[in-house]
Image (tube, rainbow, N blue to C red; front, side, top):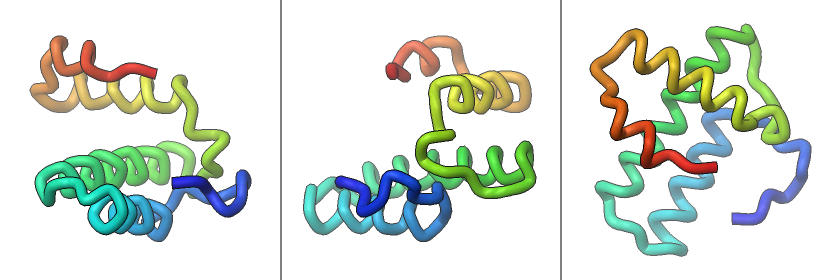
Length: 88
């Protein structure tokens, strides 16, 4: 969905708006909505813990996402083939 402001803050409210968009406008399956929302919430918590604050959408870039993925690989059983499915 288009962002009302380019300076939007990546937070739980924005994640909920995206979830609603997927569910009601795109008519995505409940499984898809939960999966995407869960992933975004994980990234949100990672950023908040690492930076100590919420960030703007512009700051949510490839470097931040790659750092999150590396952290997942180090702390979970995330498989290498899963990483290949993520594109920018």
